[in-house]
Each structure stands twice: as structure tokens, then as C-alpha cells.
Image (cartoon, rainbow, N blue to C red; front, side, top):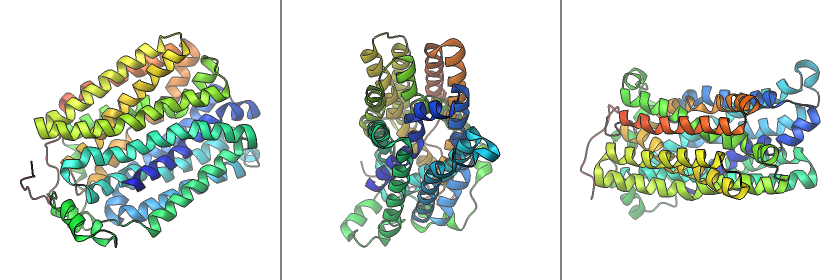
Length: 426
């Protein structure tokens, strides 16, 4: 679980670095906000497009191998961005397209990480801890997001903005080495897992496919998944959740500096606040989701946690966008992000609940339709033509809709053709 947190923290360096140093890039290459929006979206388009192949690969080849290759790929793409983009490639395709090209490759490399993280949770955590297990990689997003703006802002001010990309790529390579030399796909294969620990993990197992890896030999039941209302409700609601989340990944730092007039250093601190809230509230949401499942059953348990998180998130985002005082606005906008991620473990845990053997494939399908690819473009358009308040209000509306769609989600459904139902301990 610590490896999951480290992995997502590292991927946040790759996602956020351009957003943090975007002001320097815009000024040096005279890029408009709309152009930056398309560059940001190049990552999201690739990230969404390669979710399904990445999830399938995690089910087919195991999380350890796929995560190692994924980390190495996006790390090299990050380093190549400053080696080639704006330093030669612009002669053939232009500065904006050269940045967009490497952001696209970054998205390709990072796409398998979240689905494979879900596969790790399936193997290492029993069904009573799926919400908590899913919250680890989500908390890693908060950790990476909280540290990235502060660290990269200081690095850019002292050593130039290009240094930030070298640093991000190096961290990714180090984490990839950790997966390859230390991690295993299942606890049975890890030399430091003793018999007592293994008995605790496996005492909660309910699926033959989870233990024997049947997904490596059987086809993913895509038609069965796509024929269920629950799956479509998960996908559509996750689009709404991801739309808001990507504003913090792409535009939030620039919003604080340009729209609210903060200095680069204060913007870095303010830009870290939402991710700190994510890091703190995601584990709480994961725990509450598991507790609610124990008390009310899978369907109402997962639903109630999402409704609480997304409702608070939408309200706080709307309030923050209309608050004039910068400190108050940042606090409310940060809490809005935190409650968004408070709800998030329930999405990933539900993918495991309804299809544990094919959890990476299903979570990849869900993540493929996150609203991140559209968020930077629409946010830039709304902010330019109608102002930042309107842009954030629209995100608040989608957040509320994302929560309401969980009326149609039933986490107790069974899409797995290889499960044996046992009585779980109370």
C-alpha cells in the first residue's frame, strides 16, 4: 500500500509540473491560455484513451510488470519534453505541438497506473478493506499534489523551470526500480510476508479468480460489463468527478497567480492546499465507505459515502468561487477538492466489489471516461469569455450531477464469473 502511495505521488509530479511552471512557459514561448488548455488536454486525451488497454494489461500480465514499464515510459517522456520540446522540434511542428506531443506520451505512460493500483488492492487487501485499500493510491495523489507546487516553484525560481522536468523524471525512474526489485503481484510470492500475515489476508478472500489469476487465461467480459446500468452510472458519474479534479491538476495554480493576484511563492503554497486536503480526506472517505458497507450493505454503503463527499464538494466549490477574500476562498476551494477525493475511494472499491477478477479492466474503463480531457479546454474557454467564477460554478454543477448519478449504482452486483461467495467475518 505504501508503494501505491509512492507511485501516485510520483505520477503527480509528471502531471502537475507543467501547470506549476506554466506561467514561465507561457511567457517564454508566448502561448495563449487557449493554447495551454490544449497542451494540458493532450495528456488527458492520451491518459483516457489508454486506460482500457492499461487495465487489460494489468489483468493479463500482472501489476508489477506493467507498473514498472509505465513508470519508466512516462519518466522518459517527461525528461524528453525539456530536451526536445521548444529546443528543436518546433522547427517542424511548432512549439505548442511539440509540448503537446510529449504531454500526450506522458498520458500514455501514466494511463495504466490507476487500474494496476486497483489490481494490487485486490491481491493484498480483503473485501472488508477495499475502500481503505483504494484510498492509499488516492492519498498518494494528495501527497504528490501537496508537495509538487511548493517544491517545483522553489526549483524553478532557483534553477529554472526545465529543472523541474528532470527532477520529475528521475523520481519516476526510482519508483519504477522499487516496483521491479521489491514488489510482487501477490503476497504469496513476497519473501517478507509470513504465514500469519498471509492467513489474515486470505481469510477474507471470496474469489477463486483473485487467487489463481484466472483473468490471465480468460477474456475480459466487456459485453457483460457494458450491458449493466451500474457500470454506465459509474462511468458517467466518474466523468463528472474527474472534470472538477483536473481543474486542480491543470489550471488551479495559474488561477491563483493570474486571477487572484498571488505571487509565485504564495501561489505554490495555495496550490498545495487542495492536495493536502485530498491526502487527509481520502483515507477517511475510504474508511467510512467500508464502515457504511458493513452497516448498510454494499449498495447503500458506497452510495451514502459518495453523496456526502460530492454534495459537500459541490457546495464548497460554489462558495469558494464567490468568495472575494483570498484566504477564505483558498480554504473553501481546498476543502472542495478534499471532499471530492473523500468520495473517490468508493468508485474504485465498487469496481473491485462487482468484478474482482477483472477489476483492472473495469477500473480502466471507468477512468477512460474521466472528464479530465475536456476540463482544461472548457475551463479555459469559460474563464476567458465569462470569467473564472463561471468556470468554477460549472464545475460545481457537474460535481453535484456526478453524485446524483449514484442513485443508479449497485455495488452488490456480480459481474465476475469465477467467484465463490463465502460468509465474511463480522
